[in-house]
Image (cartoon, rainbow, N blue to C red; front, side, top):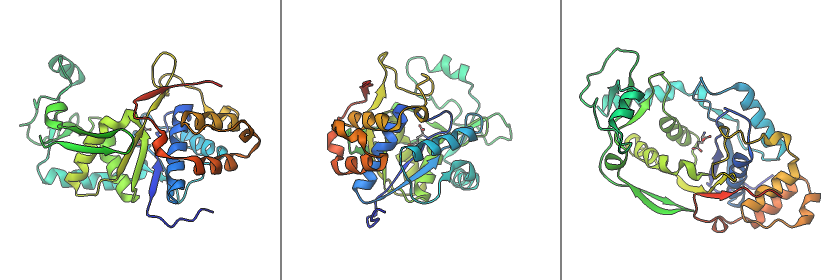
Length: 300
Ligand code: GLU
């Protein structure tokens, strides 16, 4: 049992829209090692926010896979599907402060209007609240720069008004936007440190903005490079990256550690997954991770 004496609380938050693939396993391992090497807690949250895309069978499989790899989590697994009340409450709060407005723009309208860039043009800004079911809600953004001090990628800034425009916080199909859910859940779970893939870096500015509006603390962030295949595309469910629950555990674990620049020695293959992770915890340093958006998948 680890000595949980630090205030570090990290998490892995997979969406159950498919089995765990090598890219997500590598991210899970990195956040696990970062938490364990800080003598912190590591939590698992199932991001089953979207009822149209999430499947219970995948939640079960993902948790089983984490266990197979000895990635043991602290506390009960947290499910976004159980959090509707909290999301609704926050949405009401933002609405009462006149930060939201209904938007009827269809994907087609947006594609036509926002040709040059993808910045929402405020077309629906003066819409009055409506009972029309087929509207999304957008949050007004400000032109104050948002600063992200990323532990891997360094400091960067975004001006949401100039670079993004008002963004959707409640979808037309009545699903709360990922940004709102993630911010509220990380807060509820008292997460101090978020380590995740580079593909989510851009959305962090929106999340920091929401933290500011909801007056909740901003955790520390580290975005590690995503793993991409030979074609340059990120390994993902969409690219049919294979299910790591079917792969040989020790080999796959050691290969993931190699992608995290830990130089695992050959003999490690004779150790159990727990021993391999203990070895990796001692070797782990975020300084070994390069400030890059992606790295190539190495098969060995
Ligand atoms: N559920 C998100 C995903 O699988 C990750 C959320 C996060 O780490 O903030 O892409």
